[in-house]
Image: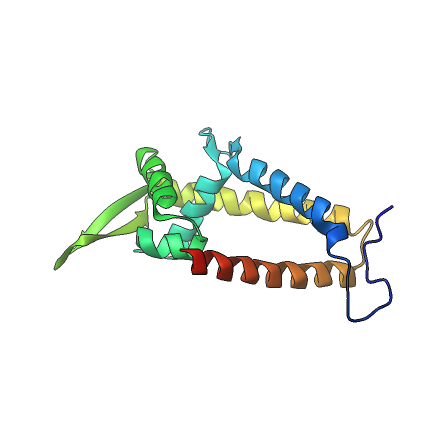
Length: 164
């Protein structure tokens, strides 16, 4: 069995032991994000698309470039997702007077409704996952995991930004 904690040497942790689980987590999470789900409006949509929709609703008028930076995805990927959201009637594009080049993104009423359903789904799912994890992990362990995950995301984001 793999030992999932520091072995006593306070200056080292065997991160290699985590590599398999980390890879599996990333694969499963990616599959979940790429999966299609009906959030309650009888119109299935990819999780990654509704996550982008949520970011647009939280940042009215955001541009594709800003969305790309915020989501750490290429402009091409974001443009494709934005096109799908627009075709679905969830967002619209608007150019501001004086700058015809920059396009700003806004949610439609259908987009706002979908985002509300999405947030309710994520909230419920997160509570279910937390409940299951608390059966095998302490709150302290979960907080430690979240802290490490947060720092790991910052490292990956920095690496993505440097490559872009």
